[in-house]
Amino acid sequence: MRAISTTSRCELSSIFFFLQGKAPKKIHAILTETLGEHAPSYATLKNWVAQFKRGDFSTCYAPSPGRPKTVTTPEIIDQIHELIMEDCWILAKSIAEKLGISCEQVGFIIHEDLDMQKLSAK
Image 1 (tube, one colour):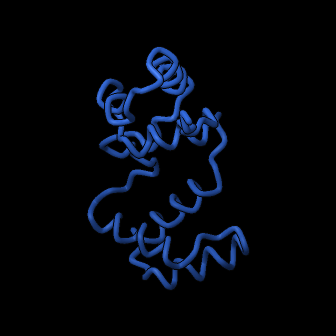
Image 2: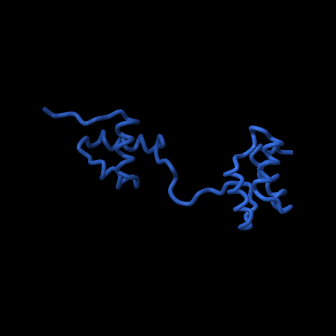
């Protein structure tokens, strides 16, 4: 049998008390009395109860739609490094278009991850 995390137990307990008709303040008081410092905050509990009222009793976090939070992967860093080594005059905008990432992210990778900077030709 798989162990249930503290957060899942709190959510399940909250669902139980919600189905009994208890208000968020009462549920928070019960969980705080039972779990002490490990109890979820009142704001978190209010969000859960609002979620339960919408009919969503899922205790799992669904993946967020849209782009991933980060594109800084070793593969992307290597590709940027190779493009710069092939053509030292390449623009960040060109790199961004080729790799499908933002110019800002390209600049960040060049300066932070590759530790490169512009040098004067003089």
